[in-house]
Image (tube, rainbow, N blue to C red; front, side):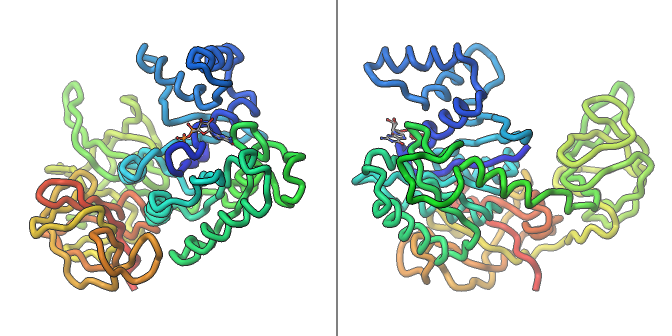
Length: 401
Ligand code: GDP
């Protein structure tokens, strides 16, 4: 399953776009469409495809498992999950907690008069890129409201492209769409003959299948606690890379001790193997005290232990002198050591004023932790900053030079 985050300013058409993609790929029942039509009518509106997503929330209230912010569809044999992230808080939360391992984004920017490319959208893009999204499909939306004008499309394209380049993003594609009428989403529209590219879903399809996965071979398990069995205690964790086999030799970090995996449970059942993404319980040849934040890894997994992290941070409010870091649920005191040049995230240029900036720095922690670069193992390379106990920024661990 490929996951795609959908970003953009409120009312620029994110839910409408997802709703139309569901309709055009036959991913929703007719009955649901009929229901969304009735809901639109009740409000005295024309049919709103966005209501297809809103109706999920009613079902959730009855205990069904659908989530308002996620929608799945299949296209040419591949499965996609779209994640609607309305604001930066949701985006940061989603990405930091590992709720979504997206590597592509659809950025929805409305071309309608008075809408356009907003500051909030710039922040969204910057944050998404820092958290590992490296491919952006920019859907310039509501072309129907501007007479399908190529000039209107080019104006937005120019602004967004200048910003993407200024902040160092080079992997992007622009597509003019009308989410409401469903044009250039799955099929090309006759109303925009000047557009020579592919429809949005085709762009996504091409990209995802070119990339491929499976580059992480080393077994790595991030531990988060213990579970009590009938007679014994197991450590619990999540496989974040590679495959794990019972009887395997592993390194326990930060102790740097060789251990053997004596038994392995997946979903509460004995298992000989576990793979990336699975939660496990295990018994080791040694007893692990306070497993939270510790790591089991193949000996050649390239993971570090230390108190000084080379990092890139982004603040969302001023940082206080009582700074803490939340690293995979472990809360530690921290200080900012060497601080590099501050960048204004709205322009990509050196920062002049305000409290919101991005910078490279060295973080000095009160105790050593197990970490890696975000590029190598995202789960071991991202964190949240707290000032006086409040969320005040986040960051990633850079590669060591
Ligand atoms: P979101 O907040 O980004 O999810 O935006 P919505 O999908 O809820 O859309 C906000 C409003 O814009 C709704 O009234 C939609 O009907 C309207 N809208 C969305 N896409 C289009 C479009 O392509 N053309 C026009 N004219 N209106 C659109």
